[in-house]
Length: 41
View 1 (tube, rainbow, N blue to C red):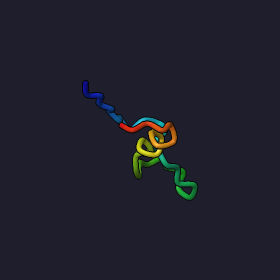
View 2: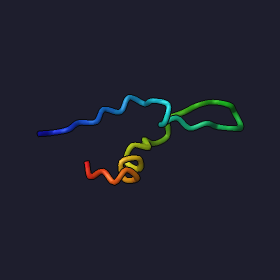
View 3: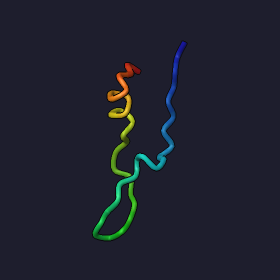
């Protein structure tokens, strides 16, 4: 059975630029979140 994870660019992937006040997407935090949860996906 295959498990797929779809990342849609939600709130936890946004970065905040304190100088300009803008939100932007740099990298996905999903790999780190899976590692912290000890998930082997």
